[in-house]
Length: 89
Image (cartoon, one colour):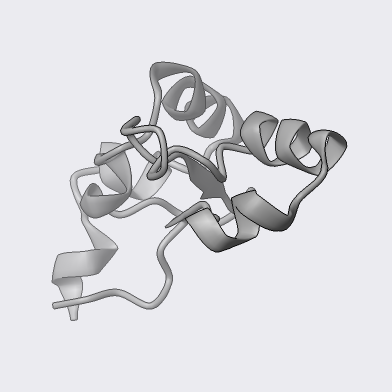
């Protein structure tokens, strides 16, 4: 079952057309936000919504730092208690 409460979501990716029309500052900003990953063959980044309980699927693609931050905020408490809100429905 797909949970609409996902705590993570993929970063929106830019395409080649956007890249061709963007200036250097826009390209640099998009690179820092992870919006060029698809164009350069990297793993796309994910955005994290603070304060939302994670489901098992949120762990896929999350970096160790993102997982550690979620743990520190208490956003993994349901998973650590043995429940996965994604599978509970």
